[in-house]
Image (cartoon, rainbow, N blue to C red; front, top):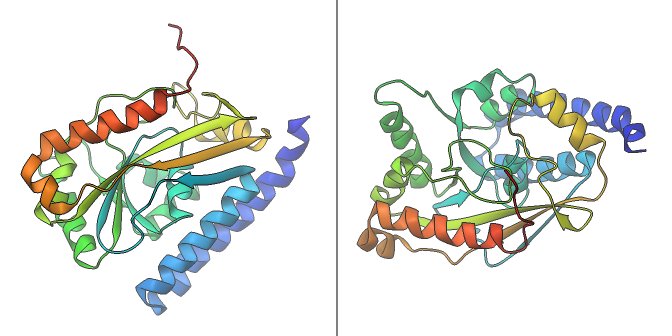
Length: 253
């Protein structure tokens, strides 16, 4: 009977996203950074409520000062899940900008877009990351480079760890654990040939959707500098994989 929820949830989401677009266009240029971050947190919480997603966290998230939050990537809602706790400047693929409504929204909220296949793209994003760290902001990175099924991890790309090391920012791995009615599931993973509207249908017709953010210990800037980019990326990948696999059902080919 979840399909009965769809028109009501969809209407609420569309109206809320339009309100968000109005906010980033008309309000963000007029208010200081702390107010923009407050608006992003509370807007994200309401959006997730409209989508029927319950969010929780465990561990000790770094809530102040520059930090690179490194997370696994399962769905388009990952951005808003993390934003609901602390406003985060995300690094995303350039094609996200083309998504209807949501793409315009995340662009207006300050997402850094990586133009794949272009020379110096990583360097350009790295400079923008350094500027955000200098302002004491949190930057979000999905090092898999694409979404996975949420029951395991894809190999990490390591290039964008370097700007955090150069900026002397702390790095904190975060595992996103999706559940459906209390059990681990790949139901809401945005993978394969599925498009955004199809994924919205799955999400908005579901009940009992929850996402848990599991924060691993912070790797402080000094320790990261000693380890180097490769070792830091490997440690983050290992820690997140252990959590993601912990209670996941076996994956069959």
